[in-house]
Image 1 (cartoon, rainbow, N blue to C red):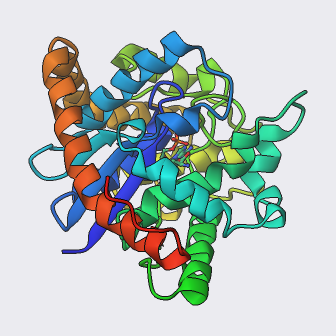
Image 2 (cartoon, protein in one colour; image 1 turned 30 degrees about the vertical axis):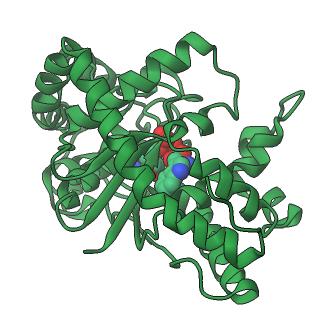
Length: 328
Ligand code: AMP
Ligand code: TRP
């Protein structure tokens, strides 16, 4: 059984980019192996977030993952901070990574840009992410395209640690979908749809009601020339709509472009496709929202399973690096 691991930050409401780029794959492959899906609350602390918001969004994100179709009988859903092995392994990996490597990460440069003071955790963010993965001997990591560079670093750290201290970690592989891996903001189609930084009208939340989805798609930025063509460089707005439609209904964005002569029809079809795609998600989210006890119990059971898997891997790493054995 291949071990699969992925994570999502509870930094805001899950959106269609998360769904098409990540969650849908997680749901589709949850039975293929021994899969763990983690709500990475510690990662959310790398940018400003109010304690009450963190609390609420962690549960909201859990509801979103389960609502998207993750089944606790088939996979493990848990909260990162409930399994302290992640942070303990992080230190060993921080002493494996270099300052230069971390400083060069695109996400660090983007999120840190223009901030008066940058949290040290924003710099070491990808090391915690590497620990999330390596502490479970995960072989496959399904993520959106924006996480490619972080995954490469996790592989580098695993390989370096193994080379220095002997075979300890499994070197993980990223799994990035071919369509939908990079859903862009509907108002600023050169920026990715994002929980924290995008425009409200540009982000479709996974739980937006149908009329809201239709309104946002209708108002999406296109171009002046009116032609429907797939060309992400020169026509980012329309290309993003075609890409989302392809991800939602199948087919390729290039082939779909040939079927449309106006933006209006394309937008109408996309809105309908998204509403259909999200209908079962809305239903399950509403059920779970009315049953917080069940959600808490699922997360509890998930953390216990995760802890059990992480303990021997951490102990292997501690021993390889030369820490003295401990009895507790
Ligand atoms: P995050 O929202 O950054 O916690 O990301 C959770 C998962 O969703 C990761 O696998 C990301 O790669 C993926 N993801 C986030 N934003 C997008 C987007 N705009 N398009 C496609 N995938 C995304
Ligand atoms: N950094 C990821 C994101 O923002 C979330 C994440 C944290 C993650 N740890 C992970 C994803 C481990 C995959 C594996 O999308």
